[in-house]
Image (cartoon, rainbow over all chains, first blue to last red; front, top):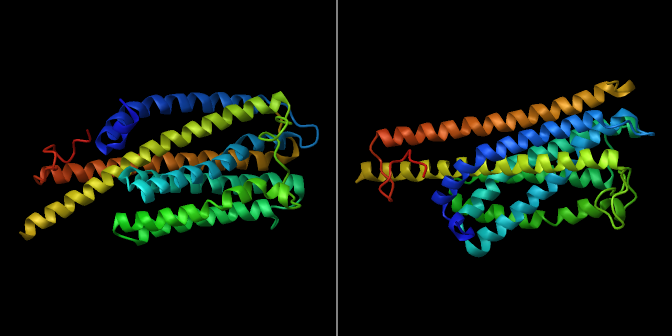
Amino acid sequence: MTLIDLANPTRFLTLTTRLLPWLAAVTAALLLIGLYQSAMAPDDYQQGATVKIMFIHVPNAWLSMFVWGVMSLAALGTLVWRHPLADVAAKAAAPIGAAFTFLALVTGSLWGRPMWGTYWEWDARLTSVLILFLMYLGLIALWRAVEDPSRAARAAAILTLVGAINLPIIKFSVDWWNTLHQSASVMRIGGPSLDRAFLIPLLVMAVAFSLLFVTLHLAAMRNEILRRRVRSLQMMQASQRAA
Amino acid sequence: MSLGPYTSFIVTSYALVGAVVLILIFSIAIDYRRQKERLRELDASGVIRRSGRGAADIR
């Protein structure tokens, strides 16, 4: 099967139905390994056991931006090639991205209280991630408000691409401004500054959460394709009754 | 395993992530069942796709 074959929604459904049980099993196994390693990781000499929050906060924070990146590529697919699966991909990803962003904000807040002495600070990193969360909610509302899927797709694609400007702002906010949030400690020039005892569980959890996203995204895309099939069949049925 | 004085923050974080992930999984599974049920109803009412396949045939 070539990549172009997957552009056909029916073939995509066939492949997804075969692939999903395997993906779900690998994701569950990796999550269990990651959780075990996180539990067994040593305490940090400054943060103590609160460093364990990092193993769930950081993957969610990465994915909050990665999902918007996926949606931005899908938005290009909608606007340039007008491919129906591109909008399906973007629409299915938005609630998952919103959930990851919500978790990044809340776990960050729960980590911040014991470490910074506050749940929230209007610094550049926290505020730009909050803006990302609000953009996710706005996009979901837009898809729900516009009944015609093709009109909603174009409007959502434009909004997604405009919103993508926020991604480098989030990434570099800790370098451009003086923030309470620490600077990058994994994806940085010179390599990760984390000790292996923390880096390995973090990377395992990051891969596990990424696979979780892929699994949920494929399942949500399958639902969206079926929803559109229901809609078109209902319209066909209504026009047959009217004739 | 001792989590020290900030146990409640750590446990709440993990519990919240678990709860949200479970909500995501169940909402997607329930939505899949709902769409399949609608397609079965359309199939039963005699609606056929342009390809000639039944509405509930997800191939």
